[in-house]
Image (cartoon, rainbow, N blue to C red; front, side, top):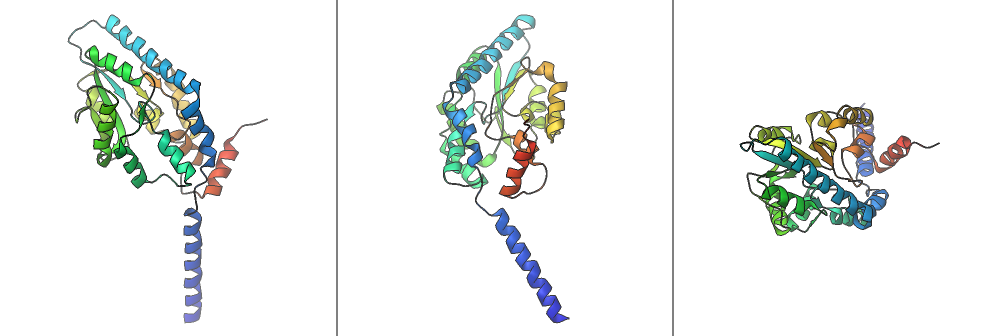
Length: 264
């Protein structure tokens, strides 16, 4: 009996080791190269960013024309990553070195304060600020990354960056409590982000591809009016929806990506 127990224990250990090795393999992030290249080199990316911030200015001006109450305190809420700051250098480094995303390297990148501004972002937010609109930066960067983020934003010329306006993640990933805290004191004219989770709780609750698409359809009138989306093909909740729940090996992720593709 003791021999069987030892054999069973050994088998269990070997299975655990093999399983751990499968998940510890180098990331297959070569598939991201096209998305990163598009982000870094395409004139279309620049044009789309200018288009988004031009539309934001038009909507802000429209709000001033239609809501003339001078006592109204207005605010604009923006996400940080891939909305006003471009982190494609970090993504490219991961691909070149065949490394996965890690909290440690992400924090190091944030605190280097070397991200660049998306085209049109600084100009629009400085314009909003000049009209008395409070700018809030709601990001899921963490407290350990707040100082570097503030230095980065200030160095690029973004307006009104302070402890009051730079709202980082302190507990859960949901941005809804932080959005509500702003909405309690200000009229939120616009929200801008690269991820639907940046706009409303309904998107945070929609985890699958079908539910995300349904939530977008149900809120279609908000897009271009109060919600303005910036393009980010590199990463995001859209990719999480492809993979679904549970830890997957790199091979399993690749299979999921191929399975979701629609061809003819």
